[in-house]
Image (cartoon, rainbow, N blue to C red; front, top):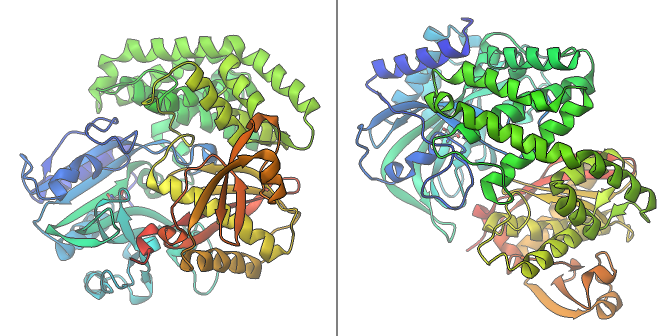
Length: 599
Ligand code: SER
């Protein structure tokens, strides 16, 4: 394999595709221009949607670029070796020009000739086929012809080998490319689908030939497109034989600075390393968000709120490792210097970046200490193991603690947060302050997209089913978090679920989906809800009248909503992870696939 720096990889990628007739186009802004459904540009194809749908692109039919991307769905996973909130995506596109054969040919040539990756280190996945689109034996045969051994070509279902940017829009089956990390296989049938660390995904070639409509149908597009995306950070990491993107040249100077400021060493202690990574990641993302050509500043709504969360979280972790938070701007300056050649807007906006990070740090540092003391104090008096929503709201309102941070701090101390109560307090406050109907509060709170609405309903089905499968009526929600990608549900239970139990829970939820049960909502007094055995946290904070959502015989809960109208809309439910959350609390992460909904 050819060792390369990030600059060298960007350059050789663009040069290679230029030599294959592609025009290099500049990275689009991180803030999508005409798409109110998402806060940030999440993939290289995102700004190209109109052209994938058939509009003519001024630069032609073959394009390539390096696109700035932000994905914050997994923000609380940042700190491990792999998660990042900002990344760069190398991409090449055919807009109704070449299709599978050439696309696979280009990828193979780039990987084996330019990056000099030995063919035996490559594995690929292709689409296994279903009622929407046939099995991709063609892509497999092209890979084979190139020299990929048969046992390195894996057929996987839609869950793995289909790409969509959102619930509607251009999409299609894909072929994904993985590199052997050298780790032992997880079993005799080890495949990239296992996610066991043996195979590192670096490239995704999507054969975009469908448009998914609002009613879940796959209509053929006017033209067959190719959309590929290669993660720059991952690829630099992989070709240099490193185990984490944080070890690449992209982070080297910033991490050295954090170590210098804190007097700590990267890699020596797990907690310290986690904090260093969080600071390095969050300040890099903040630098790009503020420095963007359509740059944002910290605020309480939309992109500004995500930015605020990132900076405040960086401040908290900086303090944890004795890194002076007022010096976080030094780290931002390092990123500005590192990236300004590729992204000149960072140089142009350098003062603004430093200034906004400094102001936000000051605003937050002033109240942080008092807020932390306040959390300690209230947790001492909490009855049970759940912080009430009003207090969580007060921490937000008075001390500027983003709710996610309160949840994180409480979790570290073994407590959950009553999110419904928090939402209620937040809404009451908004109504009082006449904030206006268009005031949104995204980032997992009042995000009412179709996906989050359905995941909310899935969460209710999950709770009802867990009780039934585990035969325990005392199982309760201990925490819940929903992003457009997945649900996360914490509940009281003392041991890991067995494989059989997990399967039974999955089957139970899917059974409820198949039965297409209507989701009904009634308003009633707290007393009446209690009488009807609705679950949920009872207390005056709900006020006199509450909403009770009922899903047939599966679940009845006090909840603010919104929900799916009937369970069939969820399509299919799948548990992706079951793990410990804190003592006596388990955590399930699950996904749904509304595209599977029966029409
Ligand atoms: N859109 C696909 C992805 O993001 C390929 O570019 O993976």
